[in-house]
Image 1: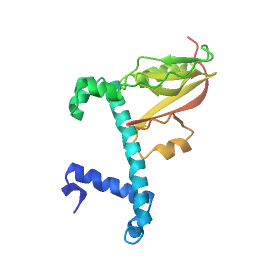
Image 2: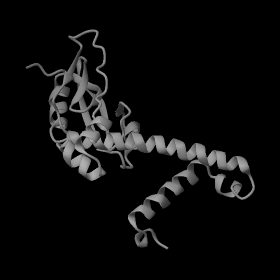
Image 3: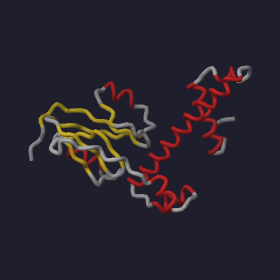
Amino acid sequence: MSHEALQPDEQLRAALSQVIAVINPTLADRLEHDVDSYLDLIDATQQGSQEIAQLLQAAVTSARLAGASWDRIGQRMGISRQAAQQRFGRTPADNEIINLEATRRLTPVTAFDEMEALSEAGREGWHSVGFGMYFHDLARSDEQWEHLRVGAFSAKHKDLLQAGWQKIGSMWFPWAYYKRPTGAPVRTT
């Protein structure tokens, strides 16, 4: 049966099973005769569950950055607005800023305006070192920076790293952020 003929939940289940098979290629054969293989299956499934929970948090954060209300998010998840906000409304802890002249927080930004704001900041020597809901933490340098946002599902990630782009942070869903110095001196205003 092709993936197209499967219902969406069956497609997801099949894809997740394929991921586990790729991560642990000997598991399927060992399930026929090795009791410990079932414990390995538990390990792989638990790790996948933790990753899915992080992806869900990132998806909700991204929806908020895009302007979705807690009410709409709760409706989509089949829970109340309050339950959605309590479960997913945490914001990352602010980084301690030691040198205020060399760091700053670019806020508020959304998925719709952050790249333009990062481009402007990059021309002035600022580059993103971390991000969260409605903000990018920036550090100052003596050269201009360019920033790039690509979909987490993009196949470009290895190519970008090979081209000198640096990954920013670890939140990889649904966006991945990259930066690289241009070598040009900072634009003075």
